[in-house]
Image (cartoon, rainbow, N blue to C red; front, side):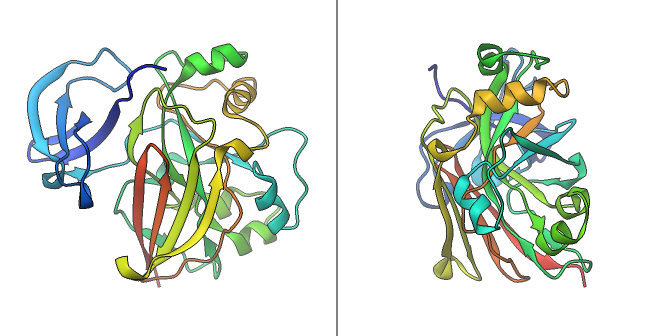
Length: 271
């Protein structure tokens, strides 16, 4: 493994930029700075010399993707809690790029659904070379880094529809962030979700470990690349552990992955 680097996309007084997050976070992210780069994260990094305190900028989703691919039932305990069998090969679906939001952006509950649920996940970000029909070794080379993801799902619509596009595809149903971490060993990391109405009332809903995935990450990347070409910046959501549950307006959802950070999103109603 190489040096871990955190790449973020952010808004500042001069516009929108990518940058490298520097420092060790204290409570609330105090002490972190972000150094602007003039390229995409997976290109040759060139610093502009501009730097801001992280508290003075607004983080966006860390990458813009041509597509987001989800993986269903990739934890046996989650498959069991919904009464499903573990698939014999990866069960993949698509989320539109318009579903992607960043840290602190609102998850918007659509009026068509009465049961919207969180799904905390480790998200894989594809690097500059992309991937087409690659083996495991090629899949590992194609991975740029990792971030936190929330595969928000309208569970009642997932049950009623013949396929999952509507249930998974509403605007705001794919929070990503807070940044991309490179060169991270993801073989055994904790994936956690907490939900609550205030910082003091957060309830743990999901705790899982990536070692319990049915299909590991190189297998997933290779499998997907034999179906569709993966382009730089594309995201693969790797599945969620047991504990999915309903989220409601006025709550905040926190998704964290060990070694990456925390992704927080408020929940609001569109009614």
